[in-house]
Image 1 (spheres, rainbow, N blue to C red):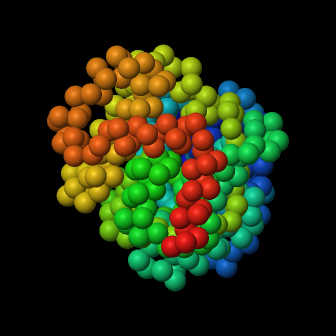
Image 2 (image 1 turned 135 degrees about the vertical axis):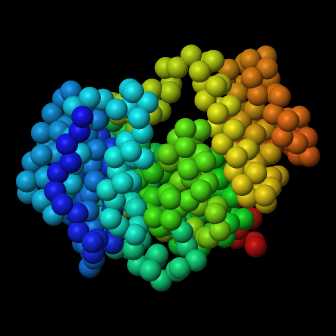
Length: 342
């Protein structure tokens, strides 16, 4: 059972998707990030509370009363995630009115009041861009600063720029793996409705689906400004849940993740095959070092033959992987040097 509040209007340009569950400690800051946006267009915030057992829903109701034309909650009485139901697909997508979709989960927040306007302007001026992202700073669970950022320095992004399909694919598959955080996503609705995105449902997580679906034929725009904060190790955080899984489950997740890239490889008619092959070998290296050689090889090794992955040198990938793991600062300096002389 669920409850949907407020009517939607047809002139809304942007729909914000927010997933919340037991985010009592964080959700007020998230909501403040929404209501403080300064824009010259109409937008709505669809916020899905998945039957929180704390006071998350009560705080959302406060903001719903103060901003009834902006905050549009969906309150669950039974937890949907535990039943295998994906809220974004089942409860947010059907009610979204905007031609653009933006994301921010209930433990993260937007820190720039002009974030939506800047991304909206980029998309309106660049019809060849399907996804706009930006730099994201990390904070610890208690809100204190954390040194991590998205994208990482090794990605080599230091200015606002348009990323072609080839440049974005290189970042996604070989340079960064997860270059941009969810709280920075701002994309055309057609990306979520695309055939590729739907093919990847149930195979990989929604944030990774968005990034891979951006390869359907248009470019990506990167804004080199921190406009949101990602909270590390918060209650219910995906990384926290993943960290306590047994190695077998982690390897299964890795295998499923690569199955998603196999689907992308086929859908794009092998346009990025070599990059995807390198990505597989990087994941193989990560598995060997984190979960043990025998388990990793037995779980993932069959992909080498089945999906034509022998056309990329494993030793070269292994060397790069070790270099990045042991000396990330050196790699970052080398990337910067290469850019300066190019």
